[in-house]
Length: 224
Image 1 (tube, helix red, strand yellow):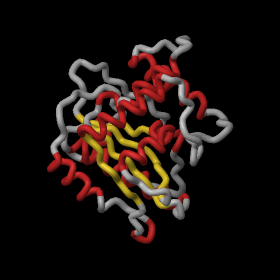
Image 2 (tube, helix red, strand yellow):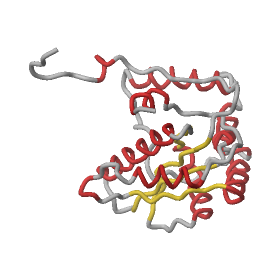
Image 3 (cartoon, helix red, strand yellow):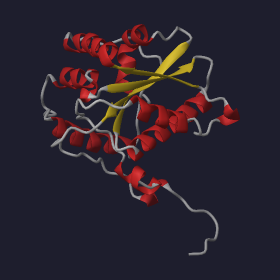
Image 4 (cartoon, one colour):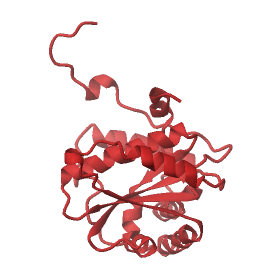
């Protein structure tokens, strides 16, 4: 699989099979992902790879919190700005509508938040979840570095025939996650990434993307 194909086929999968993921494959992916860029070569990410009974227990505990209507732990960083100006709310709403439809949850369903939280806390059935942390001393530049690292990981997973789903949702239950992986208080959880093989027969969902002219400007004279 070439890079373009990996980029084109990467999407947030929300229905995984229970087929196990090889440790050798994960070792290969994570070893290669070390080449992701980082300012000053700080490599600020701390990754915990969870599977088997520890993951099953984490899912049980997080799902119990979700089904109980637990609002979760206080956020350590905002997922979105307090106010979003156009075109961002429109893009958000369009993508959310597609996700809800694929998950079989009507937007008018009053129990929608709890149902979505419960599905997320099961990592959509994924047999592996990677949890990415950063030192609390790190700033916006290192958070950007971690994003580039995680994208590298997800593209390499595609090269191995695997899928993924980045989940900021896990920060809602960050204390439960930290107890499972043993992360100390000096680390802040950026997100989890569910990893596995896509469940057979699951409806593929690819959210739309803005036209290139909406997000890119070419400056200067260019030869075509």
